[in-house]
Image (cartoon, rainbow, N blue to C red; front, top):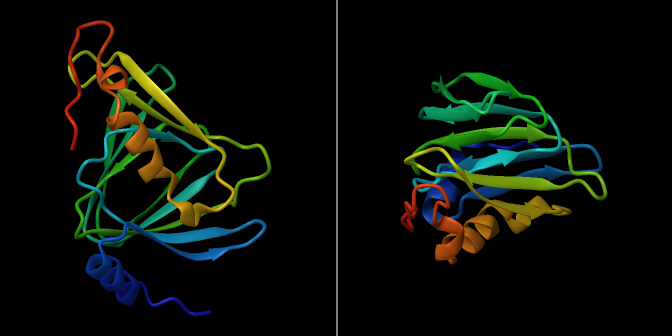
Length: 165
């Protein structure tokens, strides 16, 4: 099938949804994502990920092997490869759209979502999901679990509470 990226971006914007899965087969997962203004977690994907900015720009936050947070900027029309296991946080506005290519999860593989204190960078919380169908939007589920708990959002080191979006 042919996917019209611009039409899908318009569909997502009109519907208020964040993800439209284009293909999901044994070894391939492709989707278009609309930015989430509240994104703050770091996703640890069990497989490589390629991101292409269809519209708008993205601040891609990631954590180095030493645990330091860095940011790279993807401008409209650019592509980046994120290797498996690298904690990354794609932050872009709701009027920006990203085309993502990954491998569908193998049985038992776990997607992890981690939050860190905005004030002191202390680890706050991790959510884990086995994602057999990406159309179930695991990011939204992770956010609901995290933001519904003040305990999860409270830093054990400095006491800062991450506000809800």
